[in-house]
Amino acid sequence: MYNESLIVKQYPSRFLKQYISNIYIYHFKSSNKTLLHPKGVFEMVIQGNSDIQHSTSYSDGWETRPKNFIGGLHSKSYYVKPEKSNNLSVISVEFKPDATKYFIPEKLNRFQNKLVELSQIWNDSNLLISRIEAAKTDTERVNCIENFLKSKVENRKDSTIDKVLQYIHNSNGFIEVGQLLDVVKLSSSQFRKRFNEEIGTSPSQYCKIQRANTSLKLLKDKSYNSLTGLAYDLGYFDQSHFIKDFKSVIGFSPKQIYQLYT
Image (cartoon, rainbow, N blue to C red; front, side, top):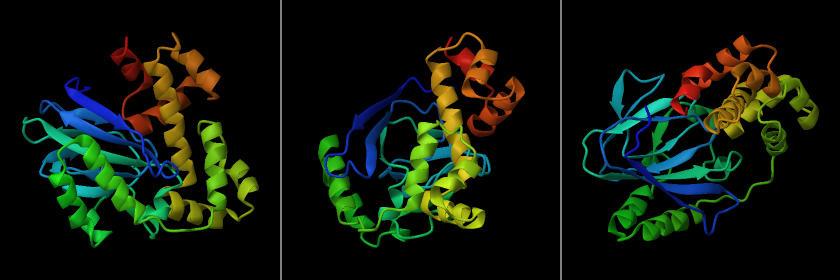
């Protein structure tokens, strides 16, 4: 299920730490498929001349992805694989959850479960791609991307939605939407609308993704011998609720994921 021949290099942002979590370069050494899980973040993906396919909850089987794109928030896990095994490389810029709006002045919910080509967002994106292709090292490629994005940052006031994200992350997604309304002092409809537009998905779905990732990490770390114990410690009323919640995002039951790492 997991592609052991996939090599991942991580490059912390040098100039845009406020907005970018990390920049990753993926080196595919085979055409084996790799399972990726939703992180609740937007990504800018540069594939260059690499042909990558994906199989998602919203695609018709395996489809070829655009070459270079912005990927909105995925609501479910999905697979990717190179069309051919010839040592392909892919660059991924992972934006912080509250930062994409500073680069893309649009309502971000239109990107959910979609891949939007860079040329549809920035008219000069072809210049970026040319510079990346001319670069000789991964470090040079990362610098090209950061310099490009520095020119795209918009000065905007902090949003009350940013406070909500802090509460969600501090609780690992185990917080009721009603509690979040007390933070923002907005009506339910206003809050949901603004959250969708600024973050790219609904508050409830975003919380569910955070809960799933918290559970996934604990399962990977083998922190629990009992799934029932894990469910109750996380705050679920029962194990069936935990399984349903987890599977709706990850696509596999906690038991199946647990078995992969034991």
